[in-house]
Length: 223
Image (cartoon, rainbow, N blue to C red):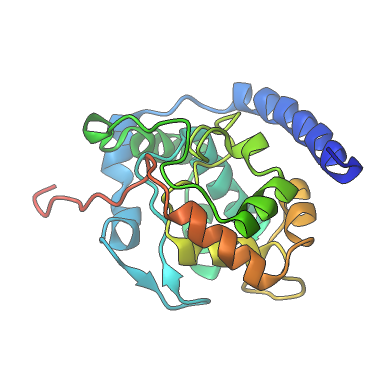
């Protein structure tokens, strides 16, 4: 393991502890209440294959089956401006801490009864080139076995996520001085900057091809 990866893993450990301490102060989510509030989400995240067109073109991410702590962390990052996205910023700023917790709890268990067990070993092995990129990025050290079992709930499951969204999200950590696009995260910024855009796209395409817990579940019109 090279020195850069060792430093990043140490930083990840520090942030893991900090995230755990913060999580203890967060309100416990109520999935039933979250279902009632989900109308703010279903217009994009409840439509299979729905594609965003602003500020960048990509399929909107699958959030059903994502970890509750990560969903809450993401919404709070948009709320604070640590993630730049005009629509998500507006939505998150209108949500209270309790509403964020409720929505996170709802989507974490949404469709759980239909999930099939995902093996720890990827069903498809990466090419030699992509394997080298994933090793250089030490991706499994945070995102876990098969990129579907993160070491902490505040990190995302990424296996099976839309590849075009993953690519856009990764590039956002490289983006600077753009009022509408960009993400700040100590670990991810340092990781992503060592890769070219084509390399990020190659990793995103592989990770997106893997089976995982994430899905888009259409909402009933009779809600």
